[in-house]
Amino acid sequence: MLKKSMDTLERIKPEAYAQKYQNGTILILDNIRSAFNVGSIFRTADCFGIYKIFLCGITCKTDNRELQKTALGAEISVPSEYFSTTIEAIQSIQNEYHIIAVEQTNQSKMLDEYVFDHPKNIALVFGNEVDGVDLEVLKRVDEVLEIPQIGSKHSLNVANSSSIVIWDMFNKRK
Amino acid sequence: MLKKSMDTLERIKPEAYAQKYQNGTILILDNIRSAFNVGSIFRTADCFGIYKIFLCGITCKTDNRELQKTALGAEISVPSEYFSTTIEAIQSIQNEYHIIAVEQTNQSKMLDEYVFDHPKNIALVFGNEVDGVDLEVLKRVDEVLEIPQIGSKHSLNVANSSSIVIWDMFNKRK
Image (cartoon, rainbow over all chains, first blue to last red; front, top):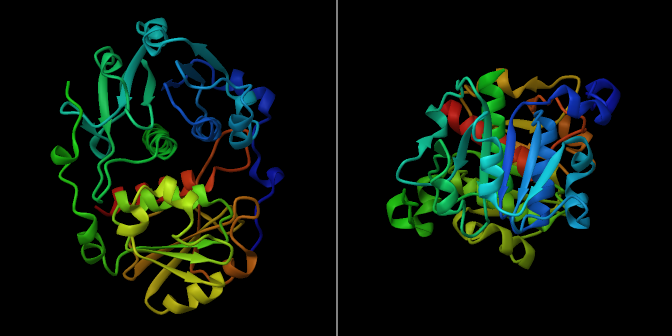
């Protein structure tokens, strides 16, 4: 058995990434505290052709060294933009995008049953490690999506939950 | 909109976890370097009812403080066992389990097309952050599974790739 090299994997060039995936899915990071989580989300975003990441509030920017250590260059291939509040980020794309927050609420739809068939492009909102997606942000989104779970803990780590939702959407829409 | 509390989520009690999920899926961690990644994998494992985690080689044990910071108690609910080598861990369950490594090889099957319908229980092997699953380990597994990707980077972070595979299996088998 042979492991695949970068040549065998036939990945696209980082400099071709932004153009190839322009106007696709956007991720909105609502006050994510850990730069490691943000970097990790960039890396996943690159793997599945996410168009752009909105970094909001206390979410670090791409010049952060810890972010760079986990993003491994994905912070260069995947475009990003900083907004001082998550609400401003949402308002900037509200007309063009169908905005879905990932959160456990009394109005959530379950990911396993969810079909990503909205005619608009999709933006996914992921929230703070402790507080989740802010309630004022939740009021402004079109839908809320929840990952069904059967264990003893409250929730998943935000980088892991974003990987699950991004994969699930990628797989269902391909 | 209201966020769900632990009461509303109706999670099982941590002390009931091990019995409820006994003899289900096992994760085999092949020399995972980062205690944060290991802790994060414990947290995901709890969410989807993984039976047990085998910690192999340089993978840290559950008394590690960094692991505990990211596992948030899942290292107590989810049973685990330490093996000095990954090959010993595999040998200990080879007769009872169908063992699948997650790696990019010339013999990998793609996750999106993969059906988890093997009559035996499943063990998933995840590898080191830099080197992936060891070649000697790959020789001893039943199948290799690859997460299809369309970006510019080589691969995903191991905690994120394990979240994706665990979710995908949970969803397909439910």
